[in-house]
Image (cartoon, rainbow, N blue to C red; front, side, top):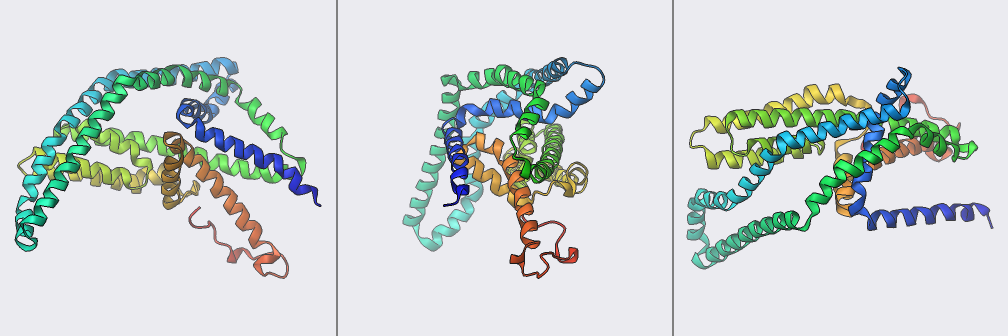
Length: 368
């Protein structure tokens, strides 16, 4: 019997145990993952400070302090305003349902004439019951979060646990990378390093570029909707911008929420058109200015693959899965491209020489 299956067994068992622990501890992992993400994103800054003569520990401390100060500043400046707008929006939801019902009442009257009074009564009762359930669920959710201490725990995690993890990871990042590199078998070292470098380049480009793009879009939407005077425009705009890392979903959700509020708030058409114009301009700038400048073709992540990764990660592991989905998608994409290149250069592809001409190999495999 070959010893290769036996040698692979410990790695398979380790992967199974790691996946099980990840699933069981998914609710407590996100501050640690966020701290690791900060260390990964700011490692080039720490390297630059180190080259300027700043000790590595001091560089890590300076970076973490600046990040925490920025988070606290955002919470102090925007936190109370956003909380107030969220509470006000939730309190307005029943009124929005009533206004929506008034808007569709003529259509309901037409349908009543065609399907009969009894069937329409059932539809109306179902709509009322579902809308009441939605409002009640939102109320229970907010009350539960505020009353159970979850919000306090998450704030403590952001302000205490995440900075500590970020500091230690950032201080020891080079040593950690060197230790992991030393564990790679020498016969696979060249291939693994090549793939790890490609993963690092693509993942860093995506995270830094997408993060900056989301912040800029959140600022644009939040400021412009507030200038127009849309009720809860700040929270709707910031929310739409921050979820723009999900391709097109941020714009669709933002347009839907903003137009719904605008139709309920305004009697004239021009403010509604102005709200729509804010999102149209934002989407145009995102597609033709921000995305090519900050991301471009170098990330190698197809929007459909990003969508699948985000929803799959969220379904499996919740918020922790969302945090892990993009790195996992980048890793799988690079490994898939590497496997495809190996397959195209092998005899299985049907080439007698074991090689394939460059003209037959597309520059990028779609969907990775």
